[in-house]
Image (cartoon, rainbow, N blue to C red):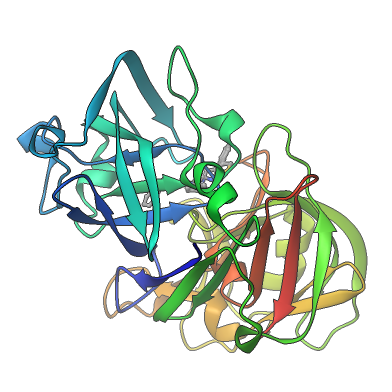
Length: 331
Ligand SMILES: O=C(CNCCc1c[nH]c2ccccc12)Nc1scc(-c2ccccc2)c1C(=O)NCc1ccccc1
């Protein structure tokens, strides 16, 4: 049974994250969750989350679901690179997204969430679409929604068609030819430790020369910006009048009036171009003449991340066959 669901930007001004409607339990409880290829825990705000940590989010109440079952003795705790995190207990219940249903999906209910989640009222939890090896449930790791759904899909794939300041889609089980142009270029995926890790073949700044390089990075729908090696982002921001790498603002900022070049990255023999508008990420604060870049250095992360700023420039196929591969197409 294949499926398709909307990827809705949570803020009309800039693409912090995208949420997708899901239903959990019986009778169905609808929540809007962040589908995240950069992690592998499905966790939700719940009736177990302290009221002081809930600010407008919808919650999942397992006690109101006749099909919910506590996974006794199991707990989870996750920490993300930005220092945010959450922890709690585990239930299994019916989980449906875009017409695809998994009965007895592990649903991790939050007993604690960090402030960065409390402050995002539009995000009611995350659906990890990384490899299940990254799942944090203890003592027995749980399977992701995609791993559970795979056998019921026509093909063991899901695709991401994220859009700039507009609603996109996640498709499960099939590849929609109307969503891309030209050919899909498939690349090998390194599944250790469990991210969708691939190697880009290089980059170009604006209409400049292509620089062949092997850039190993994670295709990550759950991270807003794109973080690349210092020499790459330095050569990009070197082309922008007034751009500086600001300790104060925590990254490259530039005068909002500056003209930005596009950024092209290689995917095998092909390439994807990120339009300049996607890299003009956001004003520092409403009305500020200072803008924050969508392309930032990965040196403090220790890992390169192709986040939403890059992914929304492409149609991306996450192929969960054995061995897994990742496909990139223009659109
Ligand atoms: O975790 C995810 C995707 N889920 C994010 C969920 C989330 C976390 N706050 C959120 C807030 C809103 C919505 C979703 C989230 N991706 C990956 S793969 C490797 C790293 C990593 C590993 C080591 C060191 C650094 C990163 C991360 C990472 O920490 N990204 C977040 C981030 C955030 C800021 C800057 C860089 C990376």
